[in-house]
Image (cartoon, rainbow, N blue to C red; front, side):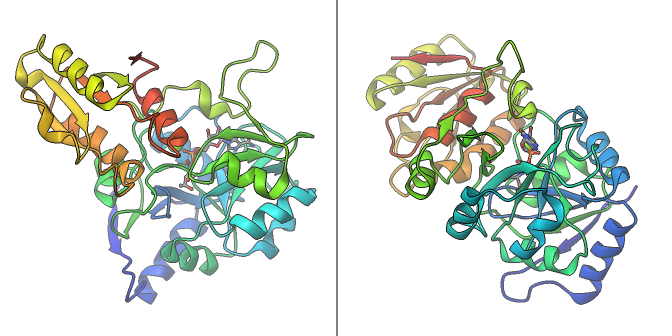
Length: 345
Ligand code: TXA
Ligand code: MG
C-alpha cells in the first residue's frame, strides 16, 4: 500500500479535495493518521469493525486493548453512550475540547471490536484545530489510538508516524509538531467514584477541583479483574535499547549518570538530559528532552527516546523529574519506557 502524505497548516487549514479524500478513505474502512494536541492518532471509522481490525493489524496491537473514539461536538455524545453521569457534564464543560478522555457505558451502535470486548467506551473531544476540522467533516466518530507501532513511543511529529506505519496505512496528515506530547488523561466514570486510569496534562488536582472525590489507579494488575485500562498491562513507550531512569536531586543525578556511563564505550550509551544539564555529560550521546525552565519536557520526551534509539545505543540513562512541578504524567511515561527500571537517589 502506498501511504499518501498531506499537509494541514495552521494558517491555511486543509485543501478541500484532500479532506474529502480522508473522508472517503475512512468511509470505506481505511486509516488516516492525524495530529491532535496530545500525540498523533491513527484514525478509522469508529462505527465499523473492519476499521478496528485494520488499526489493530497496522499497530500490531492486541485486540483486547480498546480504542478511544474522537468527536468534535458534545451533542454527539448521547449517540454513542448509554448514560451521561453528572460528573461527565461538569468535566466536559471544564476540559473539552482538550486532553481528557472519559469512559462511559457504551451504546449498541459501537462495535465490540472497537471497545476490545468491553461494555464501556472511551470518548475524547480534541482541541487541535486540524483534528477538529477533520472530525467535523465526518459523519461518524473516529476511533484513534496513538499512531505508533504497539509498544513504541507515541508519535509527536508526522515523521514518527511515517517511521512506524509507512506503507501500512492510507494517509498521514502532517500538522507539524504537537503541543502537549503525551497522551490524554483517562478518567473512568462508570465507577461510583471516578478513577484516573492514565495520568496526563489534566491533573488529578484539576479534576478534583471540578468533581471532588477521584481515585488514581496506577495500573497495577489486580488479582480479580486485571488493570482497568487494558492497554496498561502492555509494555509501553519503549526504546529498543535498555533504559534506566535516575531520579533525585539534580546534581546527584548528573554525577550518578556519569558514573554509570563510564562503564560503556561512548558510542553505546545514550543520555536523556535537559537544556539545563546537557553540557554536564562528557561521555556518551546526549539528547535533550527539553527545558525544565520553559516546561517543555513532556513535549519532547517521545522525540528524545526515538532519537536516542536511532543512535543505536545499547543503554539509555535518563534523568528523572519527580522533583519538577506537575511531573506525575511525565514520570509515569518515563518509568514505563524504562520498563520500571529506576534508581532513586
Ligand atoms: O491523547 C490520546 O488519548 C491519544 C490521541 C490520539 O487521542 N490516544 C491514545 O490512544 O493514547 P491509545 O489507544 O494509545 O490509548 C488508549 C488507552 C489504552 O490504554 C486503553 O486500554 C484505554 O485507553 N481504554 C480505551 N477504552 C477503554 C475502556 N473502555 N476502558 C478502559 N480503558 C480504555
Ligand atoms: Mg498508545
